[in-house]
Length: 218
Image (cartoon, rainbow, N blue to C red; front, side):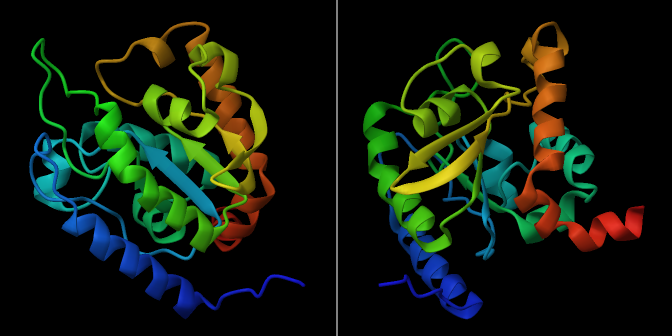
């Protein structure tokens, strides 16, 4: 029997229910409020690692300097500015609260227990949205989507095809846009990033989602 296609209103309502549960999750290592984007009924699913301290204050993912870099990349790939990307792409994260600072400086990497506690949210989001394109951003998100720990140069710049939480999707990996990272500023990372953005630009789902914006910018 063919799967019934949910209406946009049904998708939005289902995502809002997930968001309510995300906000209700409390874990001892987390700091600040849960962060999630709007309930966008999109077939493009972008997933990062975790919000930072500024994202908790501002209440939106990728809201600080790394986000500015990410949205510059996405504008090159889609032809759309940040706010339009936020309206058309569903933005998730491996965990949805700021994990706090690491002892040696920088943001703490979420623990396996924290990742596992948040995994069900992602599974529900994927089931609701059934994306045709998944964009993991940064090493942790790439590892969680691919189920392994590949070197960045092995997967960034390639279009992969796999099942993620039971849904078959294309996957285009991006490096983390943190200012502390030098990977995408030096070779081979610089070339791999350009290849990844070109893949996104040509992807059928990106072309469909941002078609009107591309026409107006042509």
